[in-house]
Image 1 (tube, rainbow, N blue to C red):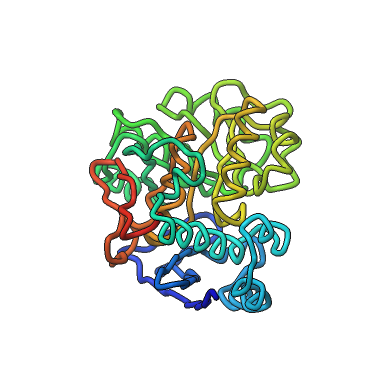
Image 2: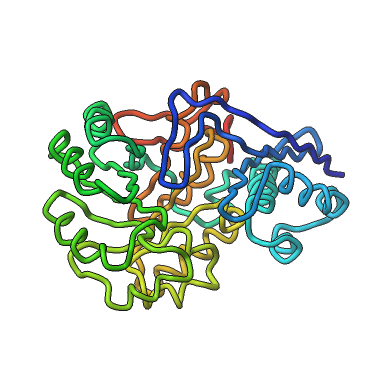
Length: 325
């Protein structure tokens, strides 16, 4: 018999996290723990308002299926029982962790993933004034920076970051806020400033303009990319996809999505929401299949969980078995 527990976790941030869609000072997540025969597996996910999710709705979605989860539900059956999203993600990741704890085999072996290794991760420069973003860039570890865009003054922000960190490769994240006519000029200028990727320039559903996307910088889908079902259509519009477990509904679907994307010739980034190390750990394992990872979530917290992930100079190290997997 499996015992399910669900907890709302509110983690204060060390500093405000601002994007074009708004700002927050805490990370709100849902933690699922599954216990069986003295073993415990954990999975954490971030409800995202952009997709109509709240902490309350995610907890309710999990509670709706408590009987099945505490019964003989398999991980494969979970994929059809619950839709993609934060609720399924927390349960799916907890199931992986529980299996690892019960069998003594690490998740990467159970899932057929490569052996975990340290990964270079992007570090986010949140939306602010050009001067403040330049200062944040100077203070940021590593040489891969993710720069949040916000509309007016974007190129001033990018130039300021580049001047502050000419050694760094830049990812620009528009969070769906660019106008179609602004992209060609931005891409041409950005390519001269160390920009290697532009993420989700247009709103989901309005990305048809990318059929004639500018060639200077690769374009990556984020808000338009949820599960493997969309990958073939996205391959006509984008050069890469950002795979986030909170969107795919857990590690199970995320693995399938990464493999489908690669089969379609797309580059792959494994990304995250702002959350702690329990949420991030499965994505670090998946990152061994990716071309790039953006897994700096725990760096934003005032305090992470015990046995949290280790970060050094823009590198994230694999999770310990005490943390997850």
